[in-house]
Image (cartoon, rainbow over all chains, first blue to last red; front, side, top):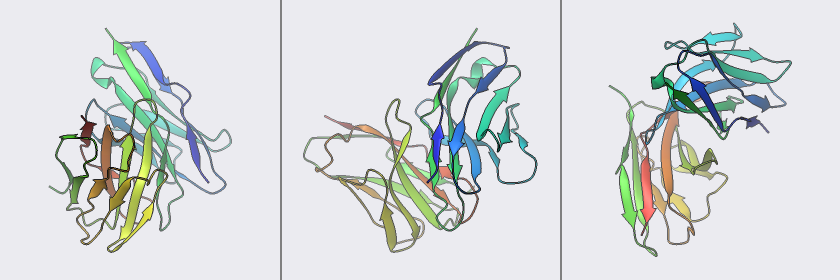
Length: 114
Length: 112
């Protein structure tokens, strides 16, 4: 069975500073990894995903995540955050296949301060 | 544009009443899911369905029921047996295989 751990429930950071949101997973099979973002009172939006190929994946708004198989991690990074990046971020893992169920972490609230 | 629609956005229910949350998608996705979200607990899977007329219990199915009579629709009924129904409910859909989910905008249910 897969599981996801997001150790940081909240990460405060000043605007224009870099940030890293940590995500570790456990799985006995090959996995697919996802980061979702949720703004207040909204659904989740896919930010980026790793399915195969290059271990570094990027989003259109400057976030990136690197799949590290040896450390079973998929940390999310951004070199310079904006106030508008304030949101909750969820890491998720799936074994794919016919079931394709996603297992979510408990989320990290990124709080960007001016 | 294709998407997934949840209605209503806010819902109030008296204790002892059943209530049904709507979820409709026009993405031609085979699979649909219902999650419950509580502060600090992430998303917990209630029910999921991979094909029409078939669905499976998730981790917290007690007090909930679903149906999947059409590919596009996956309504969730919160029954009076659910002891703590106040929460944010999210519906999602996906293709079979490796793709991620597409989420609706959620329904916030409050028991009064």
